[in-house]
Amino acid sequence: MKLNIAVLPGDGIGPEIVNEALKVTKTVCEKFGHELSYKHALVGACAIDKTGNPYPDETHELCMQSDAVLFGAIGDPKYDNNPSAKVRPEQGLLGMRKKLGLYANIRPVSTFDSLIYKSPLRADIVKDTDLMCIRELTGGIYFGRPQGRSEDGTIAYDTCVYSREEIERIVHLAYKYAKQRNKKVTVVDKANVLCTSRLWREVAQEIEKQYPEITTEYMFVDNAAMQLIQWPNRFDVIVTENMFGDILTDEASVITGSLGMLPSASIGIHTSVFEPIHGSYPQAAGKNIANPVATILSAALMFEYAFNLMDEGKMIREAVDASIEAGIVTEDLAQNGKSYKTSEVGQWIADYIKNK
Image (cartoon, rainbow, N blue to C red; front, side):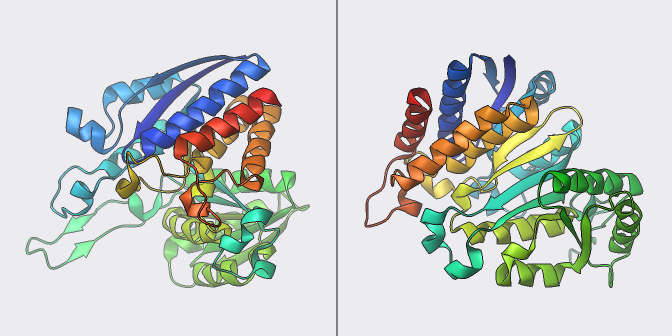
C-alpha cells in the first residue's frame, strides 16, 4: 500500500519528536511492505518567522494533497508573552482545523501498568482506565464571532456558536466508536446554563434513539471534571464541545502520569491530522530529552484511522509497551535516575519492530 503523508514538525520539541515518529513509521512500512512518501512543511511560530503566516498556503496545499498529516506542536514564548501580537502560532492550528475540516479530535486515554506509580492519583483509581474523549473541533467559542474588545479596552467578549449539523456529526461519531468499545456514551454539556449546550442535549437525545444498544448518559461539565478524577473507569466514550473538550482531555491526560504518553487523531473532511496532545515545551527544545511516545502512538493511530492498517498500529503499541517495560524511557518517566534521550527511545522502538 502507498502511504502519502505531510509532515509538520512545528515548534519547540516538535521537530525532535516528529523525527522519532517518522523513524518508527518508516520501519513499520519497511516491515509490512508499504511504500511511504512524505514531505515536510512549516506551521506555527517557525512559519510566522519565515513567511509571516502561521499556516502558509503551501502547507495547506500539501496537507490537501496528502492522505494524512503527522503533526508535532506549535507555540513559542516570544508570542505567548506578547499579548499585543497580531499574529500567533495558535492561529495556524485553528486555521488548519478550519480549512481541513478537522471536526473531531479523538483522544484515547489508557494507563500503562508499569507507569501507574507516576500518576498523581491512587493506583486503585487509575488502574485499567481505558476511555476515549471525542472533542468537537471547528465550532464553539474558539471560532465564534463577534469577538473582540471595546474601544477603551476595558471589555472583552467572545461568542459561542453551534449548529445542529456540527453537533449531529460529532455525536454520531461518538456512537460509532462506542459500538466498537464498551457501548457507553457520556454527553458532556452545561445545559443548565448555556443555550448552545441545550441544543447539544436536544440533538443528542434525538440521536440516542438511533442507537438502542448503546447506554447513554448526560453530564454537566463540572460534574464530569470531578468524576474523571474520582472514577475514571466509569467512562467509555465522552463526547463534548470544543472548549469543554480542550479542558477535560488535558485533565484526563494526568491520569496516565505524563502528558508525553497520549496521542490524538483529528478526523477531517479532507484529510486527518495525527498529533500528541502536549504542547511545544520550548524549554526542552534541542536538548534531546522530550518524550516521543505520544507522537509515536499518534503514528499508530495514523496507520489505523487513515489507512485502516490495524496490525501496523498494534505493532507500534506493542513496541511502546515493551520499551516502557524495559525501562527505555525519557527523563519524565525515569526510575532510579536512569533515563534515555529522545532519539534513543525512538531508535529502541524502531529496532524492536524491525527485529520482531
